[in-house]
Image 1 (cartoon, rainbow, N blue to C red):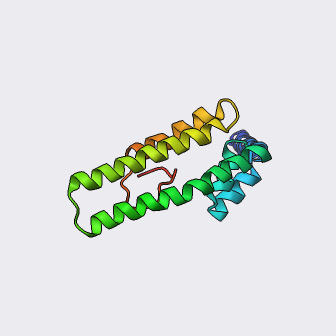
Image 2 (cartoon, one colour; image 1 turned 45 degrees about the horizontal axis):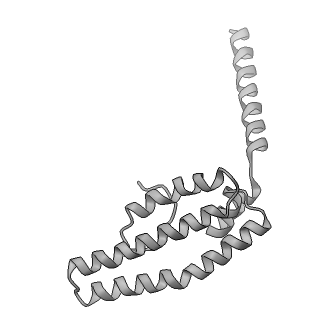
Image 3 (cartoon, rainbow, N blue to C red; image 1 turned 30 degrees about the horizontal axis):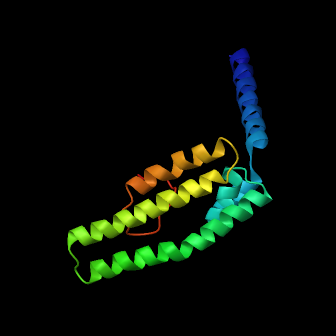
Length: 142
């Protein structure tokens, strides 16, 4: 019984040490800061390892696209509010999705090699099923 308790204590201690070492070696303070702040641009910078120049170019592209996105949202909402035909709303939604897809591809082109493909794999599936009810995000859907 005594040896079993010692073995259990050693196993638990080893597990705690392994977990602490893994956490310490894989903890990304910048990523945690972005998550806490809910800052999508800070998350983008940390997740895809953008340097200052890449981040500035992506941020400018993002800021410039904000006006275009706002126009698309306003047109879709106005069409829905006035009871436009489903075909008209669907056409406006298609324009929006095509513009977002192009924007995301432009963002990906500014990223380091390999990161752009990973970025597109993250965002494009969300665009395909986008419901135009709120701003798109990269959170995992239930």
